[in-house]
Length: 571
Ligand code: PRX
Image (cartoon, rainbow, N blue to C red; front, side, top):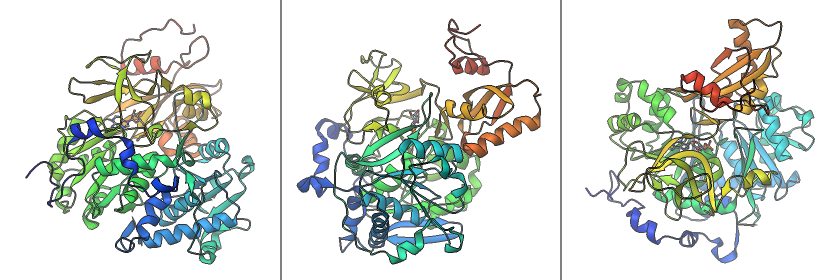
C-alpha cells in the first residue's frame, strides 16, 4: 500500500506531497473554499455549521455527538444550526451587539456548543472559561474583558463574584428552571420561545471572534484576541494535519476553555464537515478506550499526558477494546516523548503525530503529517504557508542545530490580533518581523524542529499552561504566607508539576495540616489544576534587587543544578 493511501480505504491523504505543496501553496488558494470570497463579509459560524445545514446531502449528518456518563445526545448540522439560531435570537432580545464580550463558563454540553455558535452569529466575541476555574480566575477574566454577559450553570454561579463585576449586566443559567433564581435568564425557557431562524450578522474577516485567556510569567492572564479570519487556517490545517475526510468521526479531547478545544474541538472539524465527538465527565482509561470503540473514532487529537496515562494503565485493558477504527492520531501541548510514540505503535499500530502551536498562534504551525517521515521527538515541519526559524535575541536567524528562540514569520492567517487592552504586551511578542514564541528549539539540517523548553517561567502541567505569578499571588493571600515563589518541577507523567516555595509569617509553624490548608486555599480560590502539588517552606524567597522573584534560581536549587548568574540577587 502506498504511503499516500488512507488506512482501511483507497482514499488519498489530503496532503500528498509536503515538500511540493510547501513550495507552491499560498493562503489565497485556501480562501477559495469559502463563500465569503465574493461578498467579503463572513461569519465563521455560518461556514462551520449553516453551510452544511443548507446542503441537502449534509444537513442530516451528525455534527455533534455528545457523550458523558449520564447523557448521550447527537445533533445534526441542521439541528445545530437551528439551536444556535435560537440562542442568537435570545442574545439579540437581551440586547447583545456585535463586538460585545459574552463569556461561557460551564462544563462541556450540547448547550455549550449551541450557545457558543449563537454568540458568534450575533457578531459578539466569545470567551470560553475552563470549568475548573474558581472565583479569582473567573473574576480576573471577566473584569479584564469587560464582559457584559455570562452563560453559566446554577452550580457554577457561586464562583462568579457579580458584585465585583460592574460591566456584567446579564447572566444566563443553563439548568433546571427550579434552580434558577429571580433576576437570571433561564436558558431553556428562552430557547423554547425563540425562533429557529436568524439573520446572522455578517462581519469583516478582521472582526473579533474569540478571546482566550492565557498565562505568561508575569502579571495577570492575557486576553488573546482572535478574529474570524482564523478560519482559513482552521480549515486548512484540519484538512492537511488532521487529514479530515467527509466521513471521519473525529474526537478532540481538549476542553473548549483552552484554545485546542475551540480551534480543533469546534472550528477545524466543522469547517471540514465531519462528525465531532465531545466527551464530558472525567478521564478514565476505560471511558477513553470505550469512546474510541463505541463511536468508531477515526481521527483522534489528544495530549501527551493523556497518552502517558493510558500507557501506564497497561496492555491488558487495550485488549478489551476494538480500536481498529482509529486511522490517525495527533498530539499537542507538551513534548511528545519517543516512548509514547512507541506505545502508540504497539496499542494502535499507528504513529502519533506531534503538532506545535500556542494560544497566541490560533492554529497549528509546526506539524507532522501522515505522508511525512516522523523523527520521534521532533515537532515536525512548518505547515505550507508558514515560515519558521530559530532566531537569536536580536531576531537574526541561526544556522541548523543551534538552539535559540523558536520564531514564526509574522502574518499567518490565525495569528492573534491583539492582547486585550494591552498593546505594549502584544508588541513585545514581535522582533524583526518574527513572532517570538518563548519556546527554545533547534532545527536540524533537514528542516525538522526539535522542542527544548520554555525560555520564560511559564509552567506546563499536564499540557495546561499556568503562570507562576497568578499562583504566587493567590498563595500570599493565605494568612500564613509571607512570600511565595512557584516553579515547574519535572514529572514523568504530567510533564511538570507545580512546586511552591513559601516563607511563613511570624507566628506560623510548618505542619502537614498547614501545607494542606495552603494547597486547598489555592485550589478553592483559583483553580484545581494550578494548586501546587508540592509546597516547601523556606526562610526567604530569592529576589533580585528590584524585587523580582528569581524562579530560575529556585529551580536550579531544586534540580541540583549550578546556580548560574546570581549577581542581581538581593543580599
Ligand atoms: O511550550 C509550548 C507548549 O505549550 C505552549 C503553548 O501553550 P498553550 O498556549 O496553552 O497552547 C497549548 C496548545 C496549543 C508552547 O509555547 N507546547 C505546545 N505544543 C507543544 C508544546 N511543547 C512541546 N511540543 C509540542 N508539540
